Length: 270
Ligand SMILES: C[S@@+](CC[C@H](N)C(=O)[O-])C[C@H]1O[C@@H](n2cnc3c(N)ncnc32)[C@H](O)[C@@H]1O
Image (tube, rainbow, N blue to C red; front, side, top):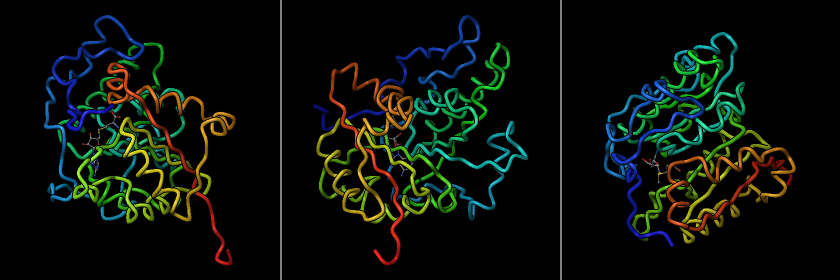
Protein backbone atom coordinates (compact mmCIF):
# COMPACT_ATOMS: atom_id res chain seq x y z
CA UNK A 1 0.00 0.00 0.00
CA UNK A 2 1.36 3.38 -0.89
CA UNK A 3 2.46 5.56 1.98
CA UNK A 4 0.56 8.78 2.52
CA UNK A 5 3.60 10.88 1.97
CA UNK A 6 5.69 10.03 -1.01
CA UNK A 7 8.94 11.47 -2.12
CA UNK A 8 8.92 11.44 -5.90
CA UNK A 9 12.46 12.69 -5.82
CA UNK A 10 13.42 9.90 -3.46
CA UNK A 11 15.86 8.37 -5.84
CA UNK A 12 17.76 11.58 -6.20
CA UNK A 13 21.25 11.34 -4.87
CA UNK A 14 21.51 7.63 -4.51
CA UNK A 15 21.01 6.58 -8.08
CA UNK A 16 23.84 5.97 -10.44
CA UNK A 17 22.37 6.51 -13.83
CA UNK A 18 22.46 3.53 -16.10
CA UNK A 19 23.06 4.27 -19.73
CA UNK A 20 20.17 2.87 -21.66
CA UNK A 21 21.76 0.51 -24.08
CA UNK A 22 25.22 2.03 -23.84
CA UNK A 23 28.30 1.22 -21.86
CA UNK A 24 31.72 2.32 -20.70
CA UNK A 25 32.68 5.97 -20.79
CA UNK A 26 29.48 6.96 -22.60
CA UNK A 27 27.69 6.40 -19.30
CA UNK A 28 29.46 9.48 -17.95
CA UNK A 29 27.62 11.72 -20.38
CA UNK A 30 24.36 11.04 -18.65
CA UNK A 31 23.23 13.45 -15.96
CA UNK A 32 23.00 12.19 -12.40
CA UNK A 33 19.87 12.78 -10.40
CA UNK A 34 21.75 13.88 -7.34
CA UNK A 35 22.64 17.10 -9.15
CA UNK A 36 18.97 17.85 -9.77
CA UNK A 37 17.46 17.59 -6.32
CA UNK A 38 14.13 19.24 -5.76
CA UNK A 39 11.26 18.96 -3.34
CA UNK A 40 8.81 16.27 -4.27
CA UNK A 41 5.81 18.42 -5.08
CA UNK A 42 5.14 21.63 -6.94
CA UNK A 43 1.88 23.47 -6.42
CA UNK A 44 0.05 23.36 -9.78
CA UNK A 45 -2.01 26.43 -8.81
CA UNK A 46 0.79 28.82 -8.05
CA UNK A 47 2.22 30.96 -10.80
CA UNK A 48 5.63 29.60 -11.59
CA UNK A 49 6.45 32.53 -13.84
CA UNK A 50 6.93 30.16 -16.72
CA UNK A 51 7.04 31.23 -20.33
CA UNK A 52 4.32 29.71 -22.46
CA UNK A 53 3.74 29.64 -26.16
CA UNK A 54 0.79 31.77 -27.13
CA UNK A 55 -0.63 28.86 -29.08
CA UNK A 56 0.62 25.58 -30.56
CA UNK A 57 0.92 27.29 -33.94
CA UNK A 58 3.62 29.60 -32.58
CA UNK A 59 5.86 26.72 -31.48
CA UNK A 60 8.92 25.98 -33.55
CA UNK A 61 9.10 22.23 -33.02
CA UNK A 62 12.38 22.02 -34.94
CA UNK A 63 14.07 23.45 -31.83
CA UNK A 64 12.88 20.36 -29.95
CA UNK A 65 13.28 17.87 -32.76
CA UNK A 66 15.96 19.17 -35.14
CA UNK A 67 16.21 15.85 -36.93
CA UNK A 68 12.56 16.23 -37.97
CA UNK A 69 12.79 19.84 -39.16
CA UNK A 70 10.78 20.41 -42.31
CA UNK A 71 8.69 17.26 -41.93
CA UNK A 72 5.69 19.11 -40.50
CA UNK A 73 5.53 16.58 -37.69
CA UNK A 74 4.18 17.58 -34.28
CA UNK A 75 4.13 15.62 -31.01
CA UNK A 76 1.72 12.69 -30.98
CA UNK A 77 2.50 11.26 -27.55
CA UNK A 78 2.34 13.46 -24.45
CA UNK A 79 3.56 12.33 -21.05
CA UNK A 80 1.93 14.62 -18.50
CA UNK A 81 3.99 14.92 -15.32
CA UNK A 82 6.77 12.92 -16.92
CA UNK A 83 9.06 13.15 -13.89
CA UNK A 84 12.54 11.95 -14.78
CA UNK A 85 11.50 10.87 -18.28
CA UNK A 86 11.64 7.07 -18.10
CA UNK A 87 8.63 6.52 -20.35
CA UNK A 88 9.93 8.80 -23.10
CA UNK A 89 13.32 7.16 -23.06
CA UNK A 90 11.76 3.69 -23.22
CA UNK A 91 9.37 4.49 -26.06
CA UNK A 92 11.71 6.63 -28.21
CA UNK A 93 13.53 3.74 -29.91
CA UNK A 94 10.37 1.66 -30.25
CA UNK A 95 8.49 4.39 -32.18
CA UNK A 96 11.34 6.31 -33.81
CA UNK A 97 9.07 8.20 -36.22
CA UNK A 98 6.64 9.39 -33.56
CA UNK A 99 7.36 12.67 -31.82
CA UNK A 100 6.89 12.55 -28.04
CA UNK A 101 6.79 15.39 -25.53
CA UNK A 102 7.11 15.25 -21.76
CA UNK A 103 5.57 17.98 -19.61
CA UNK A 104 7.03 18.49 -16.17
CA UNK A 105 6.36 21.32 -13.76
CA UNK A 106 9.46 21.01 -11.55
CA UNK A 107 12.36 23.00 -12.88
CA UNK A 108 15.21 20.76 -11.78
CA UNK A 109 13.43 17.62 -12.89
CA UNK A 110 12.60 18.99 -16.33
CA UNK A 111 16.21 20.18 -16.65
CA UNK A 112 17.37 16.67 -15.80
CA UNK A 113 15.20 15.21 -18.57
CA UNK A 114 16.46 17.82 -21.04
CA UNK A 115 20.07 16.98 -20.19
CA UNK A 116 19.31 13.26 -20.26
CA UNK A 117 17.88 13.47 -23.78
CA UNK A 118 20.79 15.63 -24.99
CA UNK A 119 23.27 13.12 -23.56
CA UNK A 120 21.46 10.16 -25.09
CA UNK A 121 21.37 11.85 -28.48
CA UNK A 122 25.11 12.47 -28.28
CA UNK A 123 25.75 8.95 -27.10
CA UNK A 124 23.64 7.58 -29.91
CA UNK A 125 25.67 9.57 -32.43
CA UNK A 126 28.83 8.00 -31.10
CA UNK A 127 27.46 4.50 -31.33
CA UNK A 128 25.95 2.51 -34.12
CA UNK A 129 22.46 3.87 -33.47
CA UNK A 130 22.78 7.43 -34.71
CA UNK A 131 19.15 8.44 -34.92
CA UNK A 132 17.88 7.48 -31.53
CA UNK A 133 16.16 9.85 -29.10
CA UNK A 134 15.71 12.65 -31.64
CA UNK A 135 11.98 12.07 -31.41
CA UNK A 136 11.65 12.90 -27.68
CA UNK A 137 11.70 16.24 -25.92
CA UNK A 138 10.53 17.96 -22.76
CA UNK A 139 8.98 21.25 -21.73
CA UNK A 140 8.82 22.68 -18.28
CA UNK A 141 5.13 23.41 -18.09
CA UNK A 142 2.09 23.30 -15.90
CA UNK A 143 -0.05 20.92 -17.91
CA UNK A 144 -3.11 21.70 -15.80
CA UNK A 145 -3.06 25.27 -16.98
CA UNK A 146 -1.51 25.30 -20.41
CA UNK A 147 -1.96 21.97 -22.19
CA UNK A 148 -3.82 23.52 -25.11
CA UNK A 149 -1.03 26.08 -25.60
CA UNK A 150 1.11 23.16 -26.73
CA UNK A 151 -1.22 20.81 -28.59
CA UNK A 152 -3.75 21.48 -31.31
CA UNK A 153 -7.14 19.83 -31.48
CA UNK A 154 -6.92 16.07 -32.12
CA UNK A 155 -3.14 16.13 -32.57
CA UNK A 156 -2.32 13.47 -29.94
CA UNK A 157 -2.72 9.73 -30.30
CA UNK A 158 -1.55 8.88 -26.75
CA UNK A 159 -1.80 10.77 -23.50
CA UNK A 160 -0.05 9.39 -20.42
CA UNK A 161 -0.73 10.02 -16.73
CA UNK A 162 1.69 7.69 -14.98
CA UNK A 163 1.81 7.56 -11.21
CA UNK A 164 0.45 11.08 -10.84
CA UNK A 165 0.66 12.89 -7.51
CA UNK A 166 -2.13 11.41 -5.38
CA UNK A 167 -3.08 14.55 -3.38
CA UNK A 168 -4.59 12.40 -0.65
CA UNK A 169 -6.53 14.99 1.34
CA UNK A 170 -10.06 15.79 0.11
CA UNK A 171 -9.36 19.51 0.07
CA UNK A 172 -6.44 18.81 -2.29
CA UNK A 173 -8.40 16.68 -4.74
CA UNK A 174 -8.82 19.70 -6.98
CA UNK A 175 -5.08 19.49 -7.64
CA UNK A 176 -5.40 16.01 -9.14
CA UNK A 177 -4.35 15.88 -12.76
CA UNK A 178 -7.49 13.96 -13.74
CA UNK A 179 -10.48 16.05 -12.83
CA UNK A 180 -13.87 16.74 -14.42
CA UNK A 181 -12.80 20.19 -15.59
CA UNK A 182 -9.59 18.99 -17.24
CA UNK A 183 -11.12 16.04 -19.08
CA UNK A 184 -12.60 18.31 -21.74
CA UNK A 185 -9.10 19.57 -22.51
CA UNK A 186 -7.74 16.04 -22.74
CA UNK A 187 -10.55 15.08 -25.11
CA UNK A 188 -9.83 18.19 -27.18
CA UNK A 189 -6.14 17.40 -27.79
CA UNK A 190 -6.66 13.64 -28.29
CA UNK A 191 -7.78 12.47 -31.71
CA UNK A 192 -10.76 10.11 -31.93
CA UNK A 193 -9.32 6.63 -31.39
CA UNK A 194 -6.50 8.05 -29.25
CA UNK A 195 -5.76 6.46 -25.89
CA UNK A 196 -5.46 7.84 -22.36
CA UNK A 197 -3.20 5.67 -20.20
CA UNK A 198 -3.39 6.00 -16.43
CA UNK A 199 -1.56 3.97 -13.83
CA UNK A 200 -1.05 4.40 -10.11
CA UNK A 201 -0.17 2.49 -6.97
CA UNK A 202 -2.81 4.38 -4.99
CA UNK A 203 -6.06 2.51 -5.17
CA UNK A 204 -8.22 5.46 -4.17
CA UNK A 205 -6.65 7.57 -6.93
CA UNK A 206 -7.20 4.76 -9.43
CA UNK A 207 -10.91 4.66 -8.56
CA UNK A 208 -11.05 8.44 -8.79
CA UNK A 209 -9.44 8.59 -12.24
CA UNK A 210 -11.49 5.67 -13.53
CA UNK A 211 -14.80 7.04 -12.31
CA UNK A 212 -14.23 10.50 -13.77
CA UNK A 213 -13.08 9.16 -17.11
CA UNK A 214 -16.00 6.70 -17.25
CA UNK A 215 -18.43 9.51 -16.57
CA UNK A 216 -17.07 11.66 -19.37
CA UNK A 217 -19.02 11.12 -22.63
CA UNK A 218 -15.98 11.31 -24.94
CA UNK A 219 -14.05 8.47 -23.31
CA UNK A 220 -14.81 4.77 -23.17
CA UNK A 221 -12.89 2.21 -21.12
CA UNK A 222 -10.65 -0.14 -23.02
CA UNK A 223 -9.13 -3.19 -21.39
CA UNK A 224 -5.52 -4.24 -21.47
CA UNK A 225 -6.12 -7.37 -23.56
CA UNK A 226 -7.85 -5.36 -26.30
CA UNK A 227 -5.05 -2.83 -26.37
CA UNK A 228 -2.45 -5.59 -26.61
CA UNK A 229 -4.42 -7.21 -29.46
CA UNK A 230 -4.25 -3.84 -31.23
CA UNK A 231 -0.45 -3.80 -30.99
CA UNK A 232 -0.13 -1.53 -27.97
CA UNK A 233 1.77 -4.13 -25.93
CA UNK A 234 5.11 -2.27 -26.00
CA UNK A 235 3.39 0.89 -24.79
CA UNK A 236 1.66 -0.97 -21.95
CA UNK A 237 4.89 -2.66 -20.91
CA UNK A 238 6.57 0.75 -20.72
CA UNK A 239 3.62 2.21 -18.81
CA UNK A 240 3.99 -0.52 -16.18
CA UNK A 241 7.74 -0.61 -15.80
CA UNK A 242 9.70 2.20 -17.44
CA UNK A 243 9.15 5.20 -15.19
CA UNK A 244 11.14 6.00 -12.12
CA UNK A 245 8.01 5.99 -9.96
CA UNK A 246 6.89 2.67 -11.43
CA UNK A 247 10.28 1.16 -10.65
CA UNK A 248 10.09 2.42 -7.11
CA UNK A 249 6.68 0.78 -6.68
CA UNK A 250 8.17 -2.45 -7.98
CA UNK A 251 11.09 -2.28 -5.55
CA UNK A 252 8.61 -1.76 -2.72
CA UNK A 253 6.49 -4.65 -4.03
CA UNK A 254 3.49 -2.36 -4.35
CA UNK A 255 0.47 -2.98 -6.55
CA UNK A 256 -0.19 -1.10 -9.76
CA UNK A 257 -3.60 -0.25 -11.12
CA UNK A 258 -3.96 0.48 -14.81
CA UNK A 259 -6.94 2.18 -16.43
CA UNK A 260 -7.06 3.06 -20.12
CA UNK A 261 -9.65 4.91 -22.16
CA UNK A 262 -10.28 5.48 -25.82
CA UNK A 263 -11.29 8.87 -27.13
CA UNK A 264 -14.52 8.35 -29.00
CA UNK A 265 -16.44 10.53 -31.36
CA UNK A 266 -20.03 11.29 -30.52
CA UNK A 267 -22.27 12.65 -33.20
CA UNK A 268 -24.55 15.53 -32.29
CA UNK A 269 -27.64 13.33 -32.81
CA UNK A 270 -26.45 10.78 -30.20
C1 LIG B 1 4.64 11.14 -8.77
S1 LIG B 1 5.52 11.91 -10.06
C2 LIG B 1 5.46 10.71 -11.39
C3 LIG B 1 6.48 10.97 -12.43
C4 LIG B 1 6.51 9.98 -13.61
N1 LIG B 1 5.27 9.99 -14.36
C5 LIG B 1 6.83 8.59 -13.12
O1 LIG B 1 5.97 7.72 -13.23
O2 LIG B 1 7.96 8.38 -12.62
C6 LIG B 1 4.37 13.12 -10.66
C7 LIG B 1 5.05 14.17 -11.49
O3 LIG B 1 4.09 15.06 -12.04
C8 LIG B 1 4.61 16.38 -12.00
N2 LIG B 1 3.46 17.29 -12.06
C9 LIG B 1 2.53 17.47 -11.09
N3 LIG B 1 1.62 18.37 -11.50
C10 LIG B 1 1.99 18.77 -12.74
C11 LIG B 1 1.45 19.69 -13.67
N4 LIG B 1 0.35 20.38 -13.38
N5 LIG B 1 2.08 19.87 -14.85
C12 LIG B 1 3.21 19.17 -15.13
N6 LIG B 1 3.77 18.28 -14.29
C13 LIG B 1 3.17 18.08 -13.11
C14 LIG B 1 5.38 16.41 -10.69
O4 LIG B 1 6.32 17.45 -10.62
C15 LIG B 1 6.02 15.02 -10.67
O5 LIG B 1 7.28 15.02 -11.29
